Image (cartoon, rainbow, N blue to C red; front, side, top):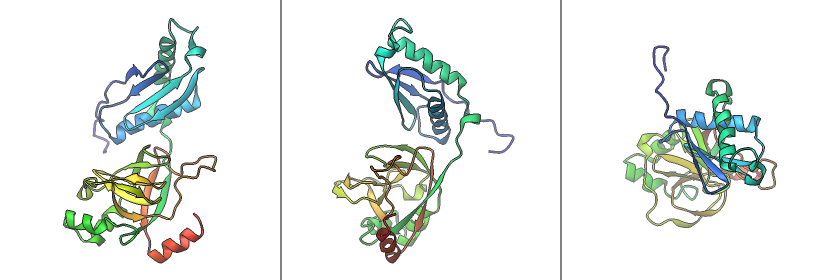
Length: 245
């Protein structure tokens, strides 16, 4: 954006109940870096100024769901929902994307592409009319944004995939995808932290452990991080795996 560009107006924030102990705060209707920044800025504000009765908050592509304890808020307004709305509206007024946007962390993820590590790479190459080397180069070129963690513990939904690599999910999902598998589905790419069923097109695998339940912070990646994939050989994959990254 140059100095003469006028930022696009952002939609008004919408709040609505989710059951009797949660509120959904919607910052936009579509997935975009601008909406993601608003989500992250508000999460940062909640982290700095948690209110009485806050249980937890869950960021997603365009929303933050705030869970609260109605019992602890019962005497602060006519209803616990009214009380939590007052708290959230105050926090929203205090939230500034310009001052609360956290500095992005860049995480490099080594990936061995193709062969047994990426069983769908050849199919994808034919489907896209590209050479496997071109698919790898296009996939490893961008710096991806972690929009959210979901589906499985530590699973990152990454935005920024080159449009040339857009591909459908598999018609028949695999009953078991190995941990570390790197896949593509639609306009997104991601990494399976755990062995789970899955329907993304698998193009490679990383020896990096993205989810460590024994760690204080189990998920290697967090929403707002940046990711860069680094191609490695099969020998390098084996060497890194032996060191239990």
